[in-house]
Structures are given as C-alpha cells and as structure tokens.
Length: 71
Image (cartoon, rainbow, N blue to C red; front, top):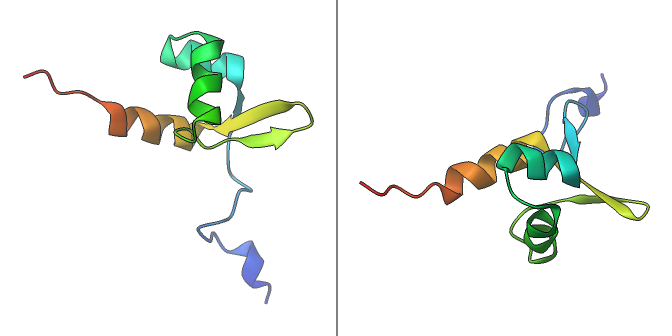
C-alpha cells in the first residue's frame, strides 16, 4: 500500500493554487501588497518559474489570523 496516497500534512495534491493577481482580487488589495506579504514571509507561496502561486487555504488562513476585532 502506498502511504503517499493518504492525505498527509505535506500533501499538495488537493491544493487550489492562486496567482498573485487572484490573491489580490480575493483580498481586495494591490498585487504589490501581495508581493510584499510573500517576500516578507507572512504569506507562504510556491515559486513556479518567475511567478508565484499561493494556496487558497494559505490565503484563507492569513485572513483568519489577520482579522481585527474592533468591538
């Protein structure tokens, strides 16, 4: 039995990757802001050639952690 077929914490087979532009649109910020988050290590990304891809789960986790409760 192949143990890699199971969903393990490092398994990326089900990951939905977004471009920097898609992340920026989802977060409603500029692409430069997303690049700053990636280069600053605040938002994990995978480098593919000269471009970056960010998993949708990482974007959602970043937003969840960054939520500011004003009340």
